[in-house]
Each structure stands twice: as structure tokens, then as C-alpha cells.
Length: 338
Image (cartoon, rainbow, N blue to C red; front, side, top):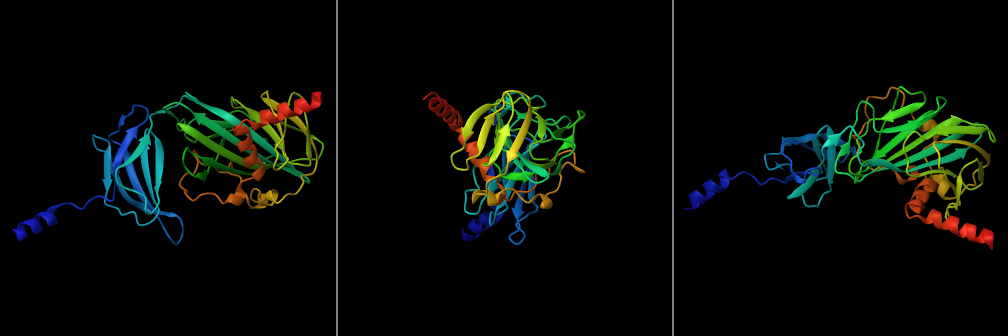
């Protein structure tokens, strides 16, 4: 009897350490035929190692790996030309997982630019420009157009030191790149816009003389576009809506109702403790429009250092997201009538 039990135990396959099901969010059904891969992070380098396993979901959309989760592990599912990722930190459940994928379309569908913020930081001989795009996709289809791109933006041919970071819904920000479109000074990005919120952060420099005019275009169909200057810098332009100052950093926020701007900046940025933790020094940046590939590099998984996030832009984004800017304008108008 004991020999029979021992024989059965030896013949039983080892339980999978990672298993689950892939759900197609566009149909609401389990999705068979999805390519799944598992990668592990090297503890010494902090980078992902080669794939630790590859598989495809079965007829019921299920997958299973015998790879143990003994360190940060990344699970990738590729469907309809788009890759969806899920990080499995050590100690978290790795069995009975559910991973969502979506059908893709070259049409934007419900995807749109919800907010577009441009922060101008004039200096001696040059100006640093930080742009943030928040794209919302309330549909159940991923917008993916490798040929024509998804995000388009204006970039003067005098720009330099462009850096781009992209953050997919529920993911960490990764380096991305852009290529020129057929239209002059317009660039495009091949980055899928999945259901949820996708964020793009751009930083670049342009030649600038204090007090001279600076022009730009808005080539996306933005729901809300904002121009921002730091405390100590005065922005002068026509047809802007003055939304007042952000309370913490004293940055001034303006709403742009049109698709182009022509601004004049004077003054100098007032140094604050927050501003010392701004974006990386321009000299250390590399222009990601030079020699860019057809699509962005999206393999990096380590989160960005907090010091690289421009505090003014980050705080203003939170303020605008809560609608506080409209409150500031209302209060300012009330004081003006008093």
C-alpha cells in the first residue's frame, strides 16, 4: 500500500507557482491564445533577466508556470499587438491571478487628451519646457497605431535635450521616444493607449531671450490645456484665462482656450526648496528624437527617482485634477468685486 502511495506522489506533476486566467476586457470572456512570458529581476543589477518562461493560454484562457516567485517577477501578456504587464512582488499571491488584455484598434475610440500642461522655465539664453499629457480611455479597446502614432505634439526645430517618459495605466513610467511626422515641427509617438489613464512627460530646451515672444501649437484635441510659469516669472499673452496661483509653489496657471499661443515671459524664477529637486540637468539629457526607433523602449520597469519629477507640475496637476483652479478663479473674481 505504501509503495502505491509513493508511486502516485512521484507521478503527480509539481504544482505551478504562477497560474491564472487572461480575460479579454473588450469581450468580458477568457481569452485563449495569448502569449505569456515571465521575467525575473536580477537582485544585483535591478534589471530584468531573460525570460524565465513562455506559454500560451489554453482554450479556457488559463496559463501556468512552475517558476517560483522568489524575487520581483514580471508577468507579460501580449495580445493583438500590445503587451500588458503585471509585477508580482515577493510575498504576494501568485496563484489564481487574473490578467486583463484588450482588443486593439487604429481608431482613438474613447481615448482623448484630458489634460495638457506646459510649464515654462526661462533662463539665461535658454528656456526649459516641461509638458505633461494625460490621456483618458474610457472605452474597452486599446488605441494602437504603430504607423501614425497615438500622441502627436509640436516641437520647434530649435529644441534640444528632449526627454520623454510614458506611464501606462497601473504601470511605472518608462523611457519613450518620438519620431517626426510628415507635418513640419510635429512629432508622433508609437505608444498604445490602453483603457484607463496614460501619462506622458516631456522635457526639452529651446533658445530664449528674456522678454521676447515665444510661440507654440496644440496639435492634440485637448479637453483642457494649461500654461504655467514659476513664482517670479510673469507671463503676458492674449486670450488666456487667468486661473490664479497654486498655493504651495505660487506657480501661476493660465487656461488656454485655443490651439496656439504667443507668450512673453519676464522676471526670474524664485528658488524654493522644492525647485532644487526638479528635472534632471539639461546637459545630462539626451534628445530622444535623434535616431529614434519606430516605437518607444518599454522594457524598463524600475520606477523613476522622485527627484526627477518637477514639483510645480506635479502639484499643479493634482490641483487641477481636483478642480481647485476654478475655485481660485472664483475667489479672485470675488475679491476683485469687493
